Image (tube, rainbow, N blue to C red; front, side, top):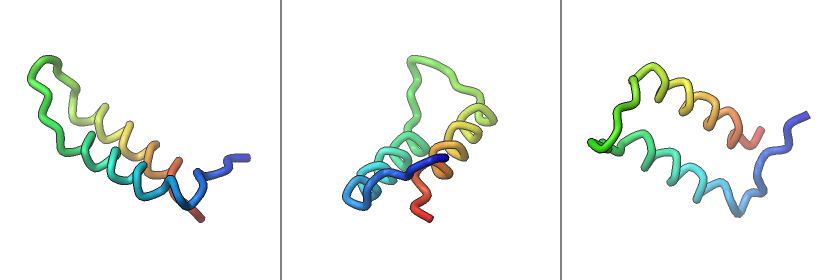
Length: 49
């Protein structure tokens, strides 16, 4: 069973996730669908309830 991060880590995890979602790294290409899959997994992982 998944145990979410402790409450003190949630804000930093969400900030990292938002930074990842909004970054436009021109040195490499990530297909938008792959990025969406990663973000969906990350959100479900950090989800505290």
